[in-house]
Length: 177
Image (cartoon, rainbow, N blue to C red; front, side):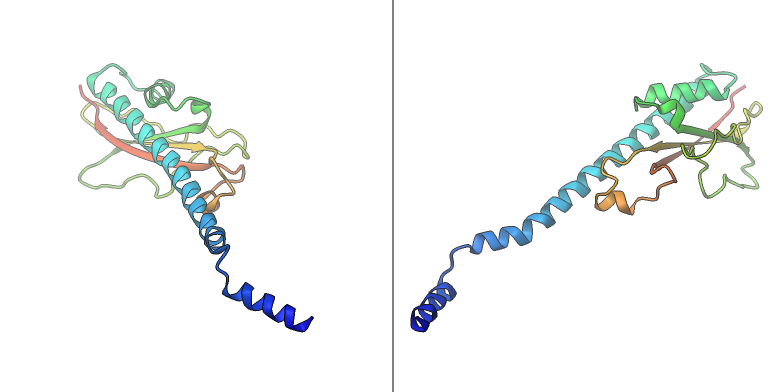
């Protein structure tokens, strides 16, 4: 009996059946992690690019005089329409605009003020239309729900109390007379 058992163990040790299975079990989770990571990153990049596009087209409309005088609701609706983000863009988009002195530059705060579903509604933070020939800076912050919040990248994203992350875009323009 011991002899038969030792022969079986020797054959088992020499056999190479299942090598591909072992490699698959080790490598497959790593490849799936990269796939999920790249999927989440592509959606974040797409949102940011669309927000940039929407903000650039809106600023172009302001410079051409189609949105004069610029007010908060008009600009917010234009950014949402041009960016084609869909969903509830109007509730999740927060705009900040203020005049800038080019000779003594003091930009916006380093942290963007974004919406938070967990907090009560905030009024418009700072939205000054400015005067003629004045340099203006406009910042848009869009909150979104991550595609896979418990995925590799979803866990690494900075989120608010309601689990939303943010993408931020900044643009500048001059109020034409």
